Length: 454
Image 1 (tube, rainbow, N blue to C red):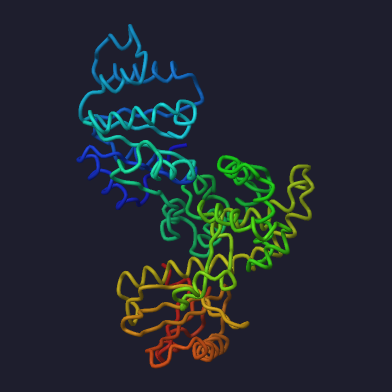
Image 2 (tube, rainbow, N blue to C red; image 1 turned 135 degrees about the vertical axis):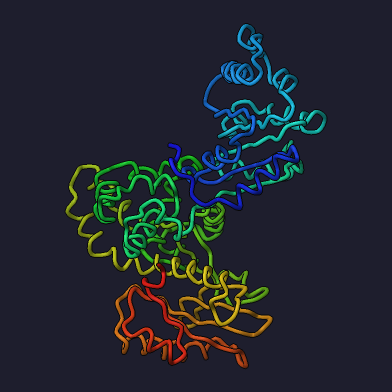
């Protein structure tokens, strides 16, 4: 499904168009539905190109399709009367300067492995065209850039298309309030096609009931995506469900899943590589300490998967049979708590925006969570060169002035445990709503709520 409106992606567009000028080999990859094809379509506007979506078909059918596309570009009827017989011939007759695009290239590479060698030969000896290889199998597309691949070392640009940020969600649902946008992003992340499935005439909760508990498009998408990338789906389901229950450390995951401790790192590594799971260490750790397993925490880093494994996957049997009382009750009782976790990621993006615009007391170079022996701070932003730190708590709550002040005072206490002696320290709070926030700001605290997200 191609979006009717192209949102953001200015940097990616600029890099693509610059690579076209160099007749470069361009590899574009990212998860399904993230907007790769729409990005390519926008990039080749007003540029002569051949776009081919690779399908599960015989090579002869692929060549017939490419023959018709050559006819459309050149007007040469020989491509209609006598279609191409080989890819060797295709590369020989490909007009100079035309952008060649293979979408879902991993399908062609799997069904016709020789294409990689032919591409290598073309790029080395006859390359007079920009070539774009696009794919949704993240693991397979990344293999194309690694040592051992016939086209290793030949790509000029490898572009991983990532989900849109929270601050672009409003362009899909312009009538939503900021609170409704938070709820939407917490469920769909920044995946353009998922956002298109939410009706602006319905509340987020109504859309969720329709799409997930009513077995709409978004209901089956999570496991479809996993099957696209993974073989042992049951093991990955077990890990993701354990993470959704709050098991964060390696030891907790090993005990909760029953997976051998020698095998679990490989499974986690695959999920991290796919962008589904996030591995974190306290932001202040350095050197060898960062790599030690005991210091790491794991979580589902993709909001769509986090929501699915929190509210849908555990109740699949009931949803399939239409017995919705239990899953809907679980959703209604647990959604606000779930939003608290998702809001931390949104608050982090908010601070990135303030940092970029120079609206903080200093520019930070790194930001992340901090924890130690039962104490935890939601976000710590650091400028190590200037020895400046910003400590921020994130609360998905409506806070009175007294409650906000109490949180900030406790944040001061916890900040002393971080060990940044002689650093310049600042303290902040991001919440759903804060009463008398201007008064707190006058006292030197950094306080933001959803009204500032506007």
